[in-house]
Image (tube, rainbow, N blue to C red; front, top):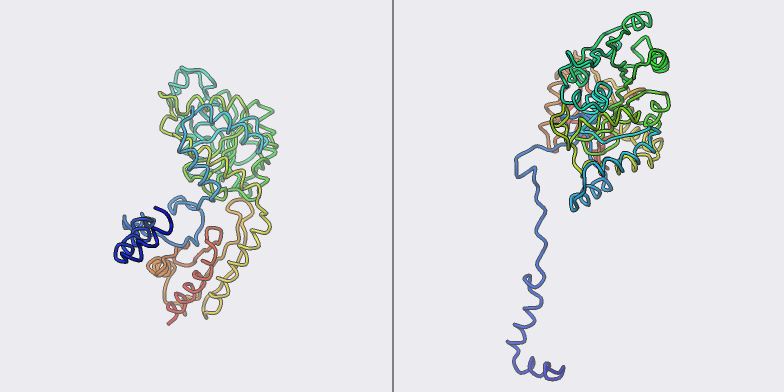
Length: 404
């Protein structure tokens, strides 16, 4: 139909013309995008503002858009799992000054797999034997300082090894024997032990014993990503879902090539191994790499100042209520972020810490903090932009309620 004939037809038959125009403008011609599903609301799962920190029970941290894009892209392609681990491991090793690296299903899994690699090497029979060490010729003891004894060391005993506790250099030297498989160090508790990193590594090297170190939550500073590899530790493990803001179910095992190679043989996709259940998928592997790459780009000094400003805003709100005392400090070894500690005069304040936490948890929006009956703790590094204002307002309201 020519343009003038179309105009004539619309003039003669306005009703028909109206119907035509309606067809090209109605909602069906340009369907509206369906609203995004709120999965947590559908399931009845409470979400909250995280003013506590990167705790596993609170699902740790939030991933950056770049990490999520890597996960999305990975989900659309197939690849061989070992090929991806090879290439990603090379990138991570270059960043962290390690001989080799592999993405694991968390730092805990990294400890188990790394020690497995030390115990078995590439021997298939030994790999299949773990955690049963008796009669295999494998060593069975890990030496650790008493002050470094934490529940997560079960990752080491999962291999079948037992942990030998020592305190002094003399006790350490006496504990070393033909059954010593490795010497394990916990960086977060370094200041509470009698033997520091360098001496620990030196004694181990003198006796030909591999060393491991757990730095699960110990960045920033960003230099910790390579500091302990440069220092000479044979294996280093770190969580992916804390300050690195990678997938919570991922981590990194890095260190000497022979240890990583042995660890890989106890990992999926291989079966009949101690680590078969410690599966990490292609999405997490790529997500972990991108999270690491993004983390090292950050101006961490500027970010620390932002966290401090947010914490000080919450501190000022609490300080405005009579009976409460606050202090801000930054841990030196692990979870290195400005942390607000709140205490109170119990003769004035009528609630304890547990009651105040419940007030925050049950409010709208729900807020999570940490602490016990006599104190509360708050950090800002899991807060989204502007949430510090909400936390400050709610903290003031709860504190006021506690003294009324």
